[in-house]
Image (cartoon, rainbow, N blue to C red; front, top):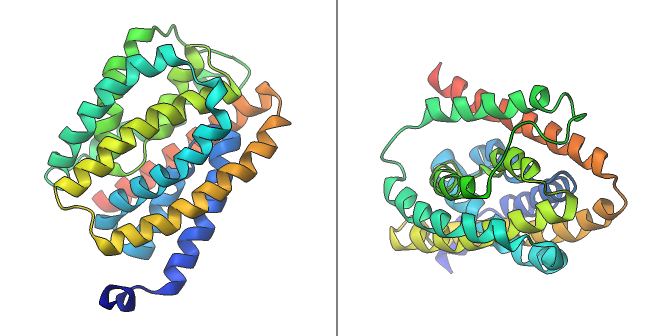
Length: 253
């Protein structure tokens, strides 16, 4: 009971509300909702707790999205991506809080911002030639960075687009990949003592909001054109890039 006395109810309510909003946006634009939550969580619960809570909350919200989009999963991409991502999540949890990756996050931010030019403001469907085996190193790298930062989904979107995934297929495949990576992330956080009771409560509140946001977002996505989806996807990538840049530059300066 003592732990519940230490938790502010208003924080749980805000986490639930922001979870709904972020994952409505995430569903209709192919991701980026979790990254947008990073500065919100930094302010509410502190930077050191953001990554575990964010990954736990998004993990709880993924089953609803998996159920909704299960028929659209591209299993070829899944099997290339997931094994390396599982390994990367455990490596990252061990590295958590041991190394600074600020400059790497700045590079990631610049890459995300550059997508608006790569796709010519959404007019191009693909910007470079993508092969399936690329998802093996991508799975490892994104898993490591995402486990440490707390959210890095948008960086994969250009690769999904360039392999030819669109709308529901992109969201379904990305969710399946993230769900199994999330199992490793939550397991590794718990094993290394990075998730404790207070953070579990925060994560559950965020996850419940994310679940509702996924359900609402699906209704908007069905009516959306592929070209509109691609433009929203690029917009969220650019916004996510600016968030990463601001976060790291403000810390360094």
